Image (cartoon, rainbow, N blue to C red):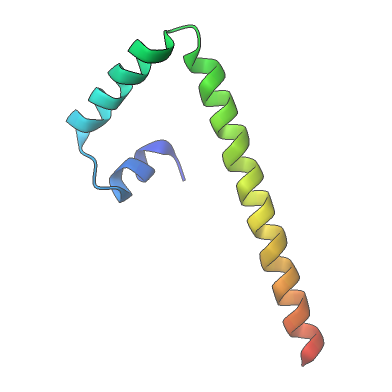
Amino acid sequence: MNMLSIFLILGLGGQEVILIGLIVLLLFGAKKIPELMKGLGKGIREFKDASKEVKDSIEKGLDETR
């Protein structure tokens, strides 16, 4: 899932996304944005990995009870 689909799920349109982008640019500056996006991507990846592990663990437990 990319950032655009997340914004669409939240019901944000193009103008809102641009406004959020400008606010982020003003708050953090152009040099910090790649670093922030890298950290955000790493956090999302870790969350997906952890949720996959939990799902696999639950499925394994269900298979053992059958």
